[in-house]
Image (tube, rainbow, N blue to C red; front, side, top):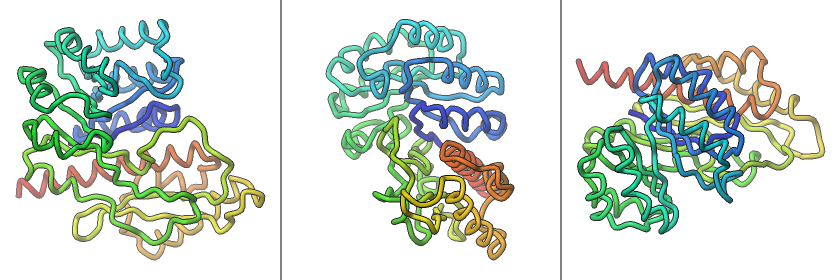
Length: 316
């Protein structure tokens, strides 16, 4: 199982809505969503779409970043709590960032005793032995950020209950700095050997959260693909125009798409044919939010295809 970690911005939520039917049909991807927006509309609409298709997800119910860093509005809490209570495919998830979050963990476990749940560790404020005791009789998975010293928890918790959120995407300071194709992950080949229930990362996105971005210098398209050794790689298509004061976003995207089209023509079997790839080649990607959205769509479809293929090979 793949557990991609998404900050609940509009782009990520729209991408999940776009692939909801495929997520449910394949049954190999369960997203983790950390809400960051104070208005719950986009989030609840996404949850409703996932519910409609039968897809499941882990949802952090005590978010603390972005517009929610100073507290959760009552309107947000009421709307999201209603969805969590009614939809058993939404797995309540408790985030540990502070000592207060540790103190609240027993109450969370008791509230959702009969539900599948998650715990996201952003900081190592609870000893592995104490966390193991808290979740020992619960259907729960602990997801560990790099900032929480994953090795300690991977060693101290049962393997089927602990997964590291790996920063698979090697982020550059500038889009212009992305170069040749590079290795992305082999976690999909390893997790069953390690006795774990799946693997997790941030997809082709940054591990750090930000609500805003600067003006585009270069524009980059990041697309994952299966290598012949069955690992996953990522290729970067960067616009020729890299100066913030030259060209516009649409023309820069067109330059990057032209490089993608040339790659597809030269190596037609490199990329899994996905809705995202088709959108690029049809010149339907005209702004940065849609660019990010199609990268996510392509990545999730690629992972689903690879995991489905791996499952078939394991049966042979």
